[in-house]
Length: 411
Picture 1 (cartoon, one colour):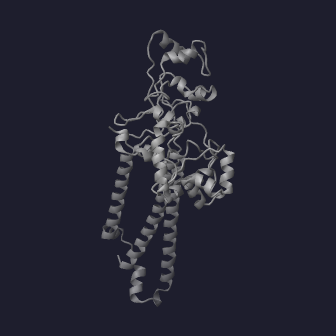
Picture 2 (picture 1 turned 90 degrees about the vertical axis):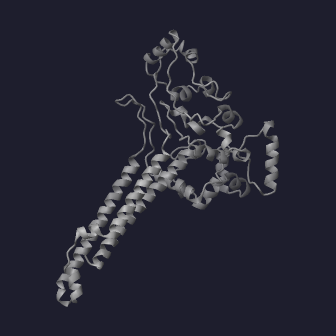
């Protein structure tokens, strides 16, 4: 096989590889944007509907990227210092609710979030998480994998079209030159009439090196992604011994979280409710939307003095210290910040990934609620002095009082 033919083949291979790489990087950007959005934004924002803040559908059509980056990093600066009319109107419309500042977000991270929002904007809003048990009895969770499948199909179609186009192009050129073979020089005739040796290509060092690098890269990436997923149980939704709907109890009936989870505002653990708490209502309420069977099982457990073996959904490792009251009372963190829209879940699932990076990011971005709490008086005074010296900016965050030190959560 001649050097010129090898160059043609290498160029075709490189073109196909670049197109495939572009597709892979695009998927990675959207995946990163989705992870950042779900980890930081879903407590207050949805894409297709208003929540605490406005729906984010087509955000890039309403505001340019420069404005979006400034607003995400410090919305209060845009509202109160720059007095941007759009931001001021938005702030007033949503009851002067202050958006958490994200000063640590890099440009590419915000761009990935916006790209994910724009990609989701063109889709039909997803319905509620299915709760119909699967054949094995486990609840089905919508993992929205259709988008990845569509991207894969489009990538394959693109590669096939590129390959067909190159083959047709080379065939036409070859025929054109053969018709004019008598006018060609001897070395050009040799190029036109030469055959294509597949084995020579497969044995070529350049081909072997490129394929080896691709295989090594794919293997390393697979191992890295697999390692990052160890211990991450996001979207875990186990079957419970007695079906319990938070959508009915917390959503429709508006029962406060602290009524059943008695420690959520008072102690380290939120506590899984005992049968006695359930019977406060179900001693009178004997039938629900699903009939009498589930409540009858509850009453039977109560009469036989047997605890219900609820399956724990959110489970931090023993090496991590976490105190509920410290976050819900001192920190003023809403339940949805960590648990997602629990009042819409018929089957509870783990909405957040609960990784160390997710917790640290929250500590870096969440302002400390020091109002009417003398414990923070000296810390707030010191923070204000540091701001005047130019050593700090904005409000006091958890990171300013040791919120990212190892011993804070691991000791």
